[in-house]
Amino acid sequence: MKKATFLAERQGAWQRFEELLVRAEAHRVPRFSGEEASEFSRLFRALCYDLATVRSHDWGRGLEGYLNDLVVRGHNCFYGSAPGRPREALGFLLEGFPRLLRANVAYFWVALVLFALPALVTGWVVGREPSLAGRVMPGTMLASFEEMYSEGKRQDRHDKERSSMQAGAAGFYVRNNVAVAFRCFTTGVFFGAGTLFFLVYNGIFLGTVAGYLTATGHYERFYSFVVGHGSFELTAIVVSGAAGLVMGHALVHPGAMTRAEALRRRGVVGLKLALGAGAMLVVAALIEAFWSPSGIPSRTKYVVGALLWALVIAYLALGGREKRSAAP
Amino acid sequence: MASPALVDAQTHVETPENVRLSFRLAGPGTRLGAYVLDLLVRAAIVYGLFFAVSLLNPLLSIAGLHWGVLLLGLFLVEWGYGFVFEAFWNGQTPGKKAFGLRVIREGGYSASVYDALLRNLLRVADALPFLYGVGLVVMIGTERMQRIGDLLAGTIVVRERRARLHATPAALSEVPPLARDQLDSPFRPSERTLDLIETFYHRRRELPDLRADEIAAILARPLAERLRYRDPKAEHLAHPARFLLRVLRTFHHPAQVAEAGARGRPSPRLGRLLR
Image (cartoon, rainbow over all chains, first blue to last red; front, side, top):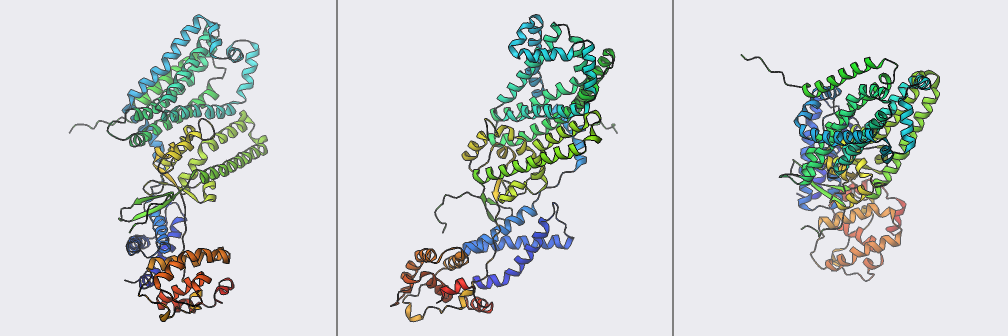
């Protein structure tokens, strides 16, 4: 087989393939008729064979480069990944996510301890000795917290102002909290160190605020404010911590795989958990912006808060459970 | 048969069709450039968002909706820009497209939605301690120039190439082939060499004449030696580029030479060569 004859014979097929390729690359999912798809597949296989032929005969880098790039484009197109469907996303949130969490529940408990323990300890310590709060955050921040949650005529006016900015507040909370959750998850790639830091730090912060406000007597408004969205938000933080720990653990104990392979496999699990946590935080942000600051009496807020907690627990514990089929 | 390994940012993949494909990897330089361009595009989008919200302000001020929309928009641009483009636009963001880069999976397959999401979320880890320090270090350290996000998602960033199949140079029919009595040896240059000469000719337009002759001389001298080319005028030393073209004419397939001739006069630049 001589190069010139080869070129003469095959050039037509390559041009036809390129035509189809240009059409295919124009859309995410190529729009071919059945016959065109078969033709594409046939031409692609022949093209791969041609590339191998040129290489084995060593007919020059120009021709080889041309065929290589054509095959690369064809390969990319031919083996494209399936496009995602929005309905799958909803199914994931309602069923897949709780199921995945239950499958990795050990990480959840560890993250919970890492978050709750510092929170409780700090809360108790600061509750006894409020001045210690100054060690964790600057006095100005403490003062602003106090102002936010104390009673009084000035606060009612403040409330009125805030209630007119609810949608704005929702946007703020989404932006802030989801970022924290994602950061908590992604820093897990540093062998879990980042996640550890985030969980403990947020726990201490929360405990300080709670303890300080309790000690200075402003706990009524604070707890009634927090109990509503806390169910979603706190749980979501723990879940994102669990996601980070999944990645960190894959790096620390890769088992029988290489670290890279273990990270890749568990990384997707961590990602899905983090996405679920993100969705929960969006819900929490909406509650935090619209429900929590409203002037509804505290008693009602506590009741609704308890219901929301029950809802979150039921969702995570029971969501996506396989229905047991009736025995024949 | 294989040439010695060169330092080259190439990676190879074996496909299910049992063919080896080569990809050119994108280095930190081009990726940084694409990133900066993306930053500008994002800034433009955010500016546009501000502008749009301020225009619609009278409509949207209920319950601070304009703030909500703005902050939500900022959030989406911050976290979603890279993801949305890489997932739904064939692995390219506007910045990457401008630089001819593309995100694909290590096996050469196109990146899926999860891959795009993972690698973009992990920018947080790569951007530490500042200006993508960790990302750059990891990129330089890995074999395929992947940052942490790429390692996790199993993706690589490649430079796209659109090679064209060049037709035989039209100048070929204009030069006389080497006379048989000027060649003393039965040596015949390999197809690879002939292809190399052809490639040289297609790039020749970009080179000044002197430089082209300089480069051509690298091949012309050893070729003349192998061919035992006897010429009192020593053309291979005086006009090496033209000599190479004559070699090509001599050993090329007659059908191709005829085809080249049929395509008409060569460009004036090349015409100077033939004098």
